[in-house]
Length: 186
Image (cartoon, rainbow, N blue to C red):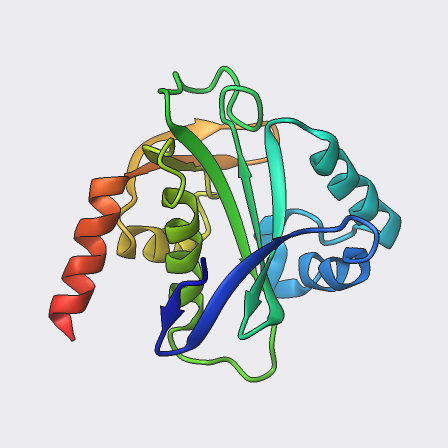
């Protein structure tokens, strides 16, 4: 299902580690993607990373499409098996998420907010998803604001091997409430 916004339509397709590697490499090594932690990655590093994700039963990567064109990256994972193992007690229905909007020379106001909304709609389209879990870097103020806008609440600061992060959660109800508040504000 493709969420429709005033900014166009959004859809998702599985990321192909080989045919998408060059495109994704250009996204994850861009200076605006510093928090993705792949600034110095070579093309082969990106291929290997996404081949490992494709082979993992609890981690999945998707290219996000805006009006049919690749525009962002979305990963979802099972936090009991990937990323957050031993850092919190996962509940049934928890789904971890990462997203990255492709760099552009012509930014569109509200686009990143539309992307995170589409990502959340996609995750909650699965009836088994009860709560989305994220662990953004504590210094990533832009994503903290976006997360709050779609209903995430910070639970605690955690230390991961690669970063200090804010463990944050968003239930289906919190997401619906955030969307309703946004609609009412218009």
